[in-house]
Image 1 (cartoon, rainbow, N blue to C red):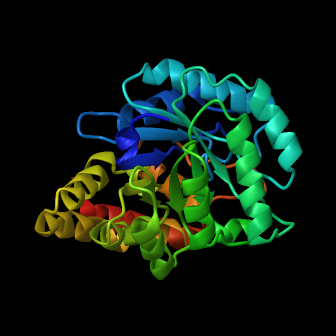
Image 2 (cartoon, rainbow, N blue to C red; image 1 turned 120 degrees about the vertical axis):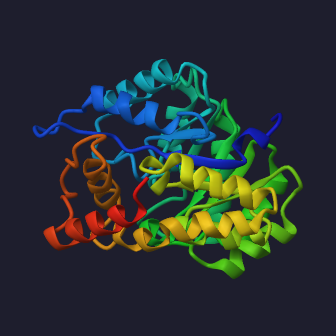
Length: 298
């Protein structure tokens, strides 16, 4: 499926800003996009992932966000469209066959949720997606949300079965599993961290980068850390990583993307409104975010 190297480095799981009434705030979305693609910013964008609140958006709203993102990015960085797996393989396959992905370079799809398929079921699900997808695929393993882990052997099997699979976003938090994938994967298949706090050690183990939450707020600092680590400059990478280290946990204590949206509000980039059933972070978390952001400074 071509050169996967453009997806090494830092991708950002872009937030979707809302107005107070719940409508999509396209002016704020433009500010966020310009913020993350600034000089030395992120290497690519993932639109409508978990952090982009794709689930509570209507199909028409998802289409409008994707179209606006393509227009605003204007080919400055590669684009990945979040395309969630849900629990209905046939429905997803039919949608893939007809969906317009003009302007996008890949899709990212999570494993089936709720019905907890076996590893064989997960494998067959993704192979059906590979048959239907017009674009390369990033496998998204996020068991904290899907309630089923895509095991390392399944990811390796998929990577070896079809060149459509360009990467895995590994958000299991299982470092041993990720290292197993790194050891046995095909050469051109990328392993991307799905957890910002462990990106540095995963790159040290051989991972190819990250699809990041914190890069919404700190695209230059986090991308610079990732690039330094990929270039084996671990002294620089550790210094940059330590600058952001204490902020990470406060991004998630009241859920994602509540924490990163509060951070973006504190930084003056956009407001922190979310779509129900998600709600803003609590006041104590908000104040702690302000304290950690003040420590980071410029």
